[in-house]
Length: 212
Image (tube, rainbow, N blue to C red; front, side, top):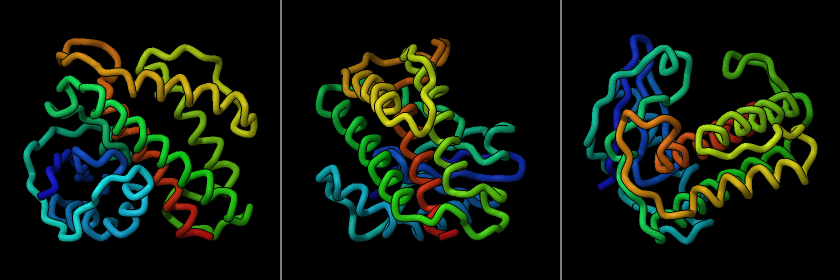
């Protein structure tokens, strides 16, 4: 059984698999979001395989949390922090979070390297081409890094050394066991950070694949 949180905005709903960082999809209704999540299981399964995680062969969802969304939800971002995200991580759990984030970055890099510079235009993601999407992902990660306490000068998306330095610092935070959090604390809890970071990289990787 895959535990899921539902985040409901006024126009969009996200369904996120809480124990599978990066597996998160949206729809206009809860039912549509869960259908999309199931549809993307075959695309997410190879990510799980990269970290040696046993991905379920039969997809059944158990909605354990329903969260109020916001303008971010309607804009297209899973921005609500679940109770599950506030739970402490031990060494094994922390390593798993970091491994999924690293795998999502690897998938994104491979998709970018194989994609044409000019992508088909369409409603999804506007009219951005490959390099613009790659730059956007790196820019977002600079903001995400600050949310987990990493203070490094934002790198240019084509500066591989600087991007790797930023990501290594982020992974170090994620793989460090963390105590439980309260909602009053600033910054992102590591469980939510891993889910958000991995989702963003994979969402844009799949966008590039769909538009190549």
